[in-house]
Structures are given as structure tokens and as C-alpha cells.
Image 1: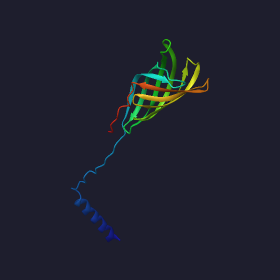
Image 2: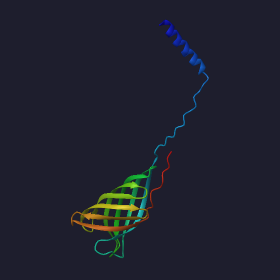
Image 3: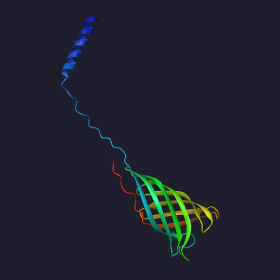
Length: 163
């Protein structure tokens, strides 16, 4: 037993001396971390209601969008906007607050708002790409959908590079 223990200690000492000058090469690893940017943009747009018949004179929309864009191209954030009627004089029409989610190429909007023109709270749902949004408001008071087409000054969110 004593001989086995002495032999193990000696082998250990030899192995330590043998590897004393040896340095293991670094192991190559590739770790990519997700990078996130916040993108804030003010915008303007023209909105055509698709309700009964499409008007030739659109409404004006002014808004502000704040998004968190990840290097994986996923996007989330919020949008606040106001619409101004241009037909029969300039007048405030409605306002909306929406959550935005999706990826850089295609965004979904879901939110709430209030229409002063129709004296109704709104639910709103839309799909948005670069410079274009199509969606519908649902007027809670009148129980009706009001689809719309909107041309915006908003391009798709900027690409975020991985670190």
C-alpha cells in the first residue's frame, strides 16, 4: 500500500515537471451577443379612409415612434399619433397610442385611441412596412370598422450589427 502511494506521488511529480513549460493554446470560441439600439423618429403621413368610398382628399397624420431594434432584426416599441382632417377645413380628428412589434421588414400595430370627429374610443390594428401602413380602426360607440391606407415618411428601422 505504501509502495503504491509512493509510486503515485512520483508519477504525479514527473507529470507536473513534464508539463511545466507547456501552455495550452487558447480554444477558439465564437460568441455573438445580441446588440440593441433605440430608434426614435417623428413622422408625417397621408391617410385615406377605405370605409364607404375612398376620398380624394386624405387626412394628415403626425406622430412619434420609439423602437428597440435588436441585431436579430426583432423590433418592439410604441407609437403615438394624431390625425388632422383636411377635407372641409383643417380640424383635429383623432389620436392613437399603439404597441409595435415584429421584425425590421414587417411590423404589426395594436392600440387604442379616441376619435373626436365620431366621439368614440377606438381599437386599432395595422400592418406596416416601409413607407406604408394598412389597417383598421374599430369605433366602440358605433360598432363599426373603419379601414384605412396610410403613406408615411417612415422607412424600415435601421439594421443593428452584432458585437
